Length: 395
Image (cartoon, rainbow, N blue to C red; front, side):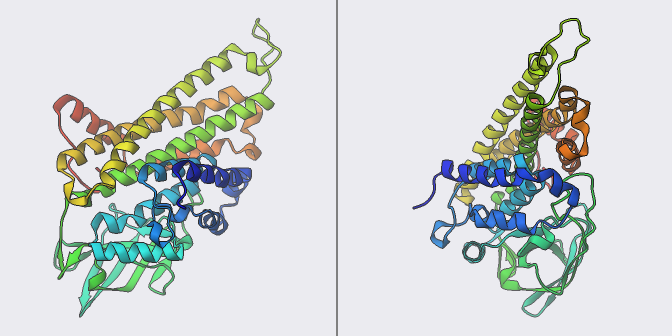
């Protein structure tokens, strides 16, 4: 019997509880998260979106977003890895033919495979050359989230002598893919997001996603990759913010002391008016952000699971604006929470052993992925001028 959405969320919370136990220690150790990804696999979360007939969860994107959020609540890095995996596992549905979709989904679902991706639009594209019935990928990417913990890697490049972008899914463990272990940033430290070199990686022309007789078959649906991944970002940002507030609340209850020099002395920090005021403000803002994120999740889930040929540019644009609004709201709210919790927990809470800083570091690091000001502009252009964002690699 297929598990319900509530059962999947309960399973995600169980995994998150295990990750939360030593999240701060693992963040400091900065080791490749093989065990963490295996935990996701063992819980069945990796194949949540996979077809039920192949042993997958058969769930929708609204559920996948919530699961990503729950994992990020405990560990932002692992939440990012899982969310990116869901996007790359859906990559075939975004651009491939029906036959290719069926093949990829059976492959990853039956084998419980985990996805990574070497698709960074800010770098030069990988170069693709033809060799008979094969395509040959070469080049370098600055970021390849998932790298060593992935079983499959999504590649994207441009066919030499053309403007044709071609996606392909290849095994990660091969001589032609070299991960450089150079991800050493202040946040999201366990995402394995370092650089990668691709050398003579071969793919059959028949596996070029969305190509029939070497011609691409375009759909508006193809352009959903950006709002889909942007909402992945938004959900693990929300999870990080929820984890920060939850951790701070627990610390305040157990450790924070009342201030004895204010003229209105309290016995417990939980009676301090300024602490109650600030937590009330942060919780209200977080609930508001969560409502907007869930609204965006429901909207994009509907179009992601509808027939691909039915999606119009207008429907796509309206979803993209909603995602942009949700993203900007949780970035602002999450960064505020990550900073202000120190005012409410006290000086002792800044000790490294508590790891309260990791929430701000994680959100601050990944929210630099693309300028949030452009998301505000997208929403402003829609509100003021009725303009929908033109699909690009970032909108």
